[in-house]
Image (cartoon, rainbow, N blue to C red):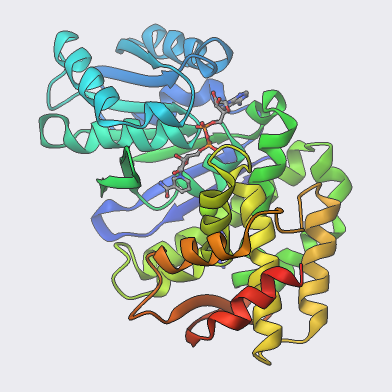
Length: 369
Ligand code: NAD
Ligand code: MG
């Protein structure tokens, strides 16, 4: 795996997508290098920063001021924090604000915030004036290890998450691990579930590294976080490089634990469980299912349970009507011709898409949790 370390605290992951290739810079205290990072990768006469009202005073005002000081005409647009801002109504508002601010085809969009902002600002970048250059400065752990890598941007419809969008790769992603210092504990832990997922699906050595560094992770140690986030970005980049637009099926490995997760999220009422919490429980269900299909031994599930629980993540399925969970699961997009499909481990560090799974065993995997 290629990863060029610049300094002990600063790494670059190159996402190789031919003419759409770009760098992800990961380090501690690198947020103030944002203007030169952008300028080295795009000619910027007008920068439109998109953020939310919680991230704005923490980080976006500061980046906007630095951009302006470096000579860029800078516009800062802020939306209310939260998933409801990922809507066509908000996109419509932002398109019109861009127009009023004199944005044109040379304007560059910069997302400063969590996954909601990355997806929304990326969607504006993909659509305004038929597409603008785009940068991401992700500020949640989930956005740093997951949503800012891979080029999926978009908004929700009232009854369908992420239903309208595009594949739109950024010109660069700047990840400062120090911004995680202000992230609420629950959001931080939830992001760690996706981190653990990368170890289970692709990298047993990384999984062991996480097991050995639980205490530093809990303390949000900036050196360990730089290593952890860089490795996750590299692992996701490897998958995205092999299947940029989710056409070969390779990208499906990223959905480990997510079929159960989506069913729990749907039946608990959105907002009860954070996505990462549902991923944690979902991975253990998938792992138990793999055990019952004879694909793995129980110790593979045990190691995941131990690590997830040490990281403060829930491991037991929520107390909800199991039949509602099963109905939700059968509505999930990974169901083909009425048969359930799951991404399941064959060993630590390797998963496969498994079809034709009996509903009874999936139900059992939840009940045994
Ligand atoms: P979010 O963007 O809503 O951020 C969570 C909360 O944390 C918000 O209230 C935000 O204001 C606050 N926040 C952000 N950074 C902060 C910081 N450094 N300090 C303090 N508070 C901070 O949620 P999220 O979990 O980052 O992202 C979830 C979204 O990501 C969902 O819409 C999901 O669909 C999307 N997503 C997209 C992809 C993709 O590939 N595009 C992948 C995974 C998830
Ligand atoms: Mg996820």
